[in-house]
Amino acid sequence: MTTLTKDAIKQSFMKLLNQKSLSKITVKEIVEDCGINRNSFYYHYDDIPSLVEEILNEQVDEIVSLGTDASIFDQIIIGIDFALKNKKAAMHIYNSVNKEMFELYINRVSQRTIDGYMELAAKKYNICDRDREVITMYYKSLIIGFMFNWLNNGMNNNLTDDLKRICELFEGNTELVLGRCDKKEE
Image 1 (cartoon, rainbow, N blue to C red):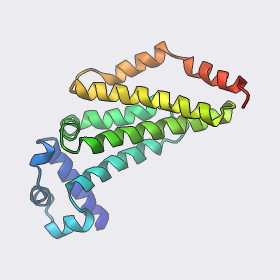
Image 2 (spheres, rainbow, N blue to C red; image 1 turned 180 degrees about the vertical axis):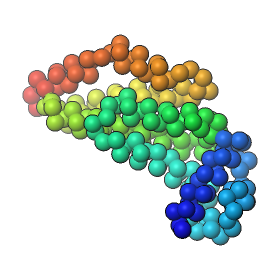
Image 3 (cartoon, rainbow, N blue to C red; image 1 turned 90 degrees about the horizontal axis):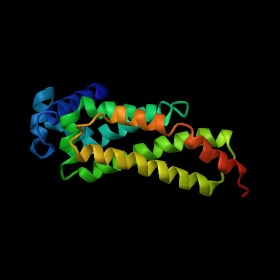
Image 4 (cartoon, rainbow, N blue to C red; image 1 turned 135 degrees about the vertical axis):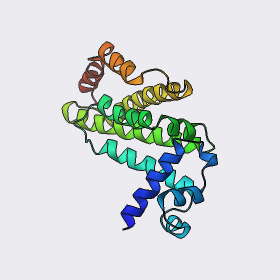
């Protein structure tokens, strides 16, 4: 029953968030929409920001569940797809006072995505810890930059196509970089 209640709360919240800004949503509206009482909401969540945080963390977990066999691109696409399916909600969170939470979400997704990729690459290449940190920082910064640029432009361009094209243009560059690490002595 607990899982069903939490799912109902999340679904109602996302429905409302796709209709109006985060600051305009109340716990009363959420519980009325999903047919529970306020105590049930507060049994599961301290407040609306904690609900938002759980939803974002679940998305991170979904992306990470792909494991290290998925490409960086495949992992990022899951996050982009979630944002596109909930475009108004994503923009409402991004433009809210909880923007910092959304930025942390993008940061965590990027970090975990690159860490997973680098874990796989470390098995194939001899990468020292410092090179691994620098390469991770580089790719994480690229992803975060693309995401914030996309959000700042109202998610209006097709980021998926842009990322596919970037992958085509820079195909093989990561392997060249990793190959240089392989030759480096520690």
